[in-house]
Picture (tube, rainbow, N blue to C red):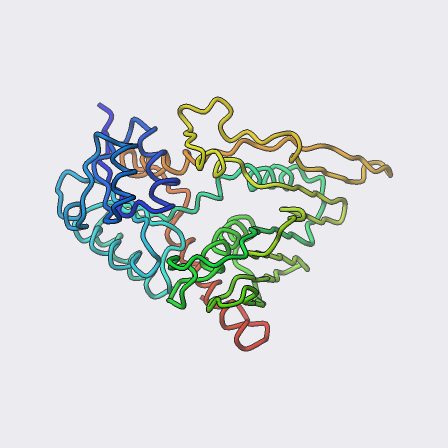
Length: 355
């Protein structure tokens, strides 16, 4: 008999409402049992969307509830460690929103505790399941670029106004664009290319009145001349290419962002949307490469995006003992890169990668 995992979500802000609840509710292997939130507007929203789910105002009602198998932590970054720790100690499996933790030491503490408790611990690095990221994988595996020498990816937004109540824009540990958007880009680069030799980072605060960074450029250098550039900003009105790959035989360029987030914001779900994760042809990439002395130009159809696969993998890891796709050790390495980025930016120099 298939085991159904009783699942609870701590936090019903953007992550809980947009990236957690729809996927848990859409997958019959999960039973969305409880949601924690204290914000009156969020309570009303949760009750409206999930009338059969119990809405609680105390995390103890989740952590100390024996039937709960899996806890999803979608709260501000500074609470990832204590809430995940409490859940693991209570015998729950845990999926925590990215970034994993604020520091590597915190990440190591949770990894050791999960092993001690023999529980699954993973991190919501859903951008590994983007259409763009997986299209890049397809292009790299084709070999048509030859030896890759440069990889550049952007994650940009445009918002001039500050959000007065947004914790991500307050001078708190784990706040700022690097922990937010940068964590996605770093995780993707580490999955594709592994740990770098060197890290260089420039961070800037471009919007008046902000006390944390809202613009970054990271350069990761590898052996054999490979350079990875990761960029993000909040004042990019007209974005350039999202992905640019240069090889010694060709170039791949792709515009546009994965469509799943926009669909989720409109209320779409993977179980009800007919074109889920399918990018329009207008943002398919272009691959230009040499073959037999001639330039070949190909339009590369985007791979479908499937954020739901992350949740299915969590289920299979818990219920069937399958290997995690997003391992906590990998998420910890992302935090290590972030730590080195802050060091590099502060000291205005390139730093060697070290664990």
